[in-house]
Amino acid sequence: MNESTAHELADKLITFLETGDPPEGLFRPDVFCDFTLPLWRLQVAGVEEVVQARRRSHPAKGTVPRWRCDPTAVGFVLEVEERWTDADDHWYCRELFRADVTAGAISDLSVYCTGDWDSAQQERHGREVALVRP
Image 1 (cartoon, rainbow, N blue to C red):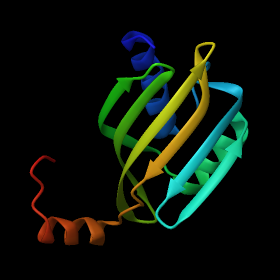
Image 2: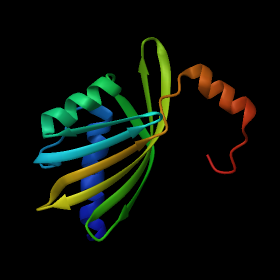
Image 3: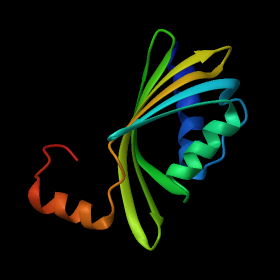
Image 4: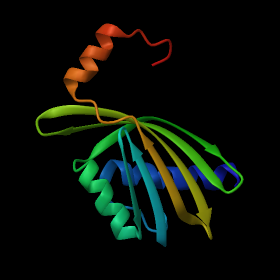
């Protein structure tokens, strides 16, 4: 996949992550998503099922302050950092998405999530770990 198309779809995927609403043309109607979390794995098929799975795991709108997109032969890989507020706390996670693209839209999506860190976990991490690169 060319870099321009990969970045265009990655931008749409980021919009979906931030808002919970998929932009037009992001997913094929029969999209399949394989979602791996710490200690759990889920699979869904179809746009509405992907949207509902996202809303169950991250019900609040948020931001993606950092991301990186790398095109692959059949789609792209997207690495993101997400932040959001929910249940009176500030949350953080990192995720890796591998997207296969068919006819200009995501047909298969694998998601690997670090798990959601509340503010206490983020503070603990900040005290105990010095990252070389943020």
